[in-house]
Amino acid sequence: MSSINGISFGGLASGLDTQSIISQLLAVERRPISLLEAKKKTFQAKKSLYGDLDGLLDKLHDATKDLRLTSTFLDFDAKTSDEDKHLTASASSTATAGKHEIVVGQLAQARTRTTLGSTDSDTTRHGAGLLRFDFNDARPSEFINIPDSQAEPSSLDNIASAINAKDIGIQASVVNTGIGNAPYKLVLTSTEPGTDNDFTVSTDAANNDLIALASELTNDNSIAAKQAQITFNGVPAERSTNSISDLIEGVTIDLAAVHATGEKTTITITPNAEETGKKVKAFVDAYNEVVDFISNQQKLISGGSSSSSSSKDEEVKSNPLFGESSIRTIRSTLRSLVGQSIGGNDAYSLFVQIGIESDRDGKLTLNQGKFEEAVIEDPNAVRNMFANEDAGIAVAIYDQIDAWTDSIDGLLAASTKGIDRNVSDINRQIDRAEEKLDAYEVALTQKYANLEITMGRLQAQLGSIANIGYRN
Image 1 (tube, one colour):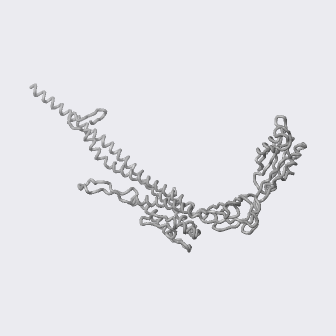
Image 2 (spheres, rainbow, N blue to C red):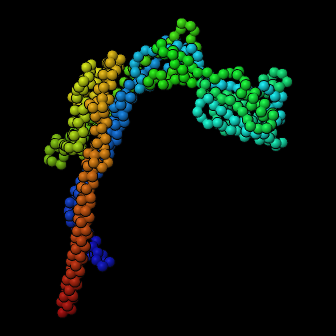
Image 3 (cartoon, rainbow, N blue to C red):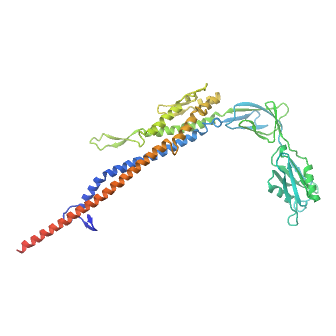
């Protein structure tokens, strides 16, 4: 049904299905728009796939993060010769393989000072004033105010609470020894061991009870502060703690017991080839995901039967990124990087020598056993293949992905910006074509409306002539 100025015409005069005619004519004229819209969808699919590729490259980037640094490439194990009886040891990725002998002569010990005793912990008052704490190291003195009133007596409980509230490196508690008529003692202990953390207590208060309390604490030597004393590879050493992390690079030693005369413990540090292998396996898997993605985009696919006369013919289609220069660049660059020879590496120069092989499609496979053997045999050579700052494969891949995925100048950014420009251009073409189509529809509607009006007039005139002849 055609319409003009709000009046609809459905072929009343002409007998034509004008709406169908107009629709078919418009459908013919819409074909270029449909082609543009299909082209737009292809570009949008490309952009989405570039987003997927960016995500896969990020995953590979993360997988090379630890492999590219000499400080994080290798994992190490630290084992002791006496089943952790005298000490335990743990190694980080910054350790170096080797053996070390340690003799523990003395454990570090925290200072503990106590009062002589009190009949109770909550009512007996010990006087108001400032308690001063001085330490063996260079830290400034600490002052704790001890109030004393009927509402807040200077009891052992309240003194302990005041000290703990200041967090000065001393833990205060009140202990009921259960001995004698004055079983309650104020116990002060350094939160850290070693002689640097030793302390004394004094007061400038005039109250004799508080002076006596401070004097009792300072004069008590029940548990003295001590340094850890060890012999490391024949060299005497001291530390203020039993957890020592600055003796062997990348190794933490926790002392547990003193050696008897003639005893010693051997710490053996070896590469943890299995853990390092897990990181390399993650790299190989992430690398293969990128290769699979690019390979799939380079394949031609069957689209089913074509519209040709032969039913045997099949339409062959390509994936959206088929032939894209950017993904060809990424594939060829990655292949080149993993296949390069590392110079200056006497033991190993190629991936295949350490159990990483490439197949005809460019995918990598990891022979875990062969890789672990290589790590154990020459850990530095294996590490150099990945983490050499000048030619390491992981270094090169990490930096290359940085360049490809740069949001401003990267290869992927350039590709997606080009797609965005194409989509914008297509949208403008579609908008112009839609405007022309709208104008064409108006013109067709006007044309067929005029036809109906003309046909109606002619039919009316014919009717009038027929009536005149009938009267005559």
